[in-house]
Length: 148
Image (tube, rainbow, N blue to C red; front, side, top):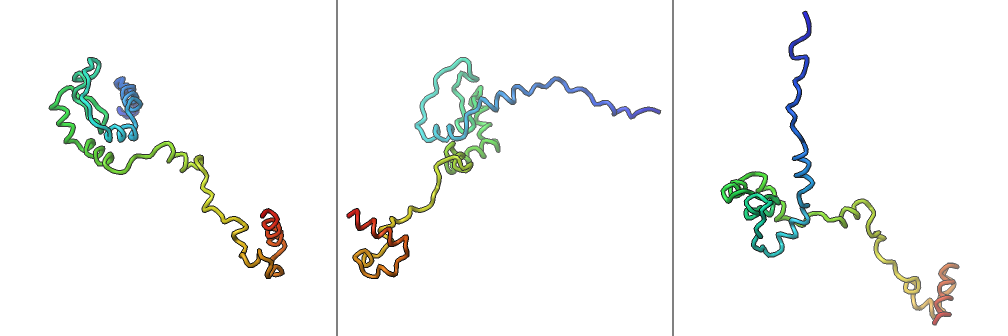
């Protein structure tokens, strides 16, 4: 009579999430990768700190590989094919797009309004049919004529 034997959950084996977080924050953003793909490809310099001396690199995924065979296997994966398709499309969003979507960018005040003097017909400015104007329009006509 006691509790079920599966009551206590086994402890986790000490898996650290540091590597996943490091990989997440060390990656380049999509906008930087897209800009690099548009530039000409230069030969990669030798770097002892990178896997495979930095010679086997996937530009779309921003990953280094230890050999050409592993890199070629990576080219066949679903993740790589999705990244290639994403990078062939339109340019990713930029900081300006994000600010405009949040309403923090340049204000869109609509089309420019016409000047008040061009909204009044020229026949009215010459003195004909001034009685048909309202008081605000009459004031604008007087101001326009006086500035000439």
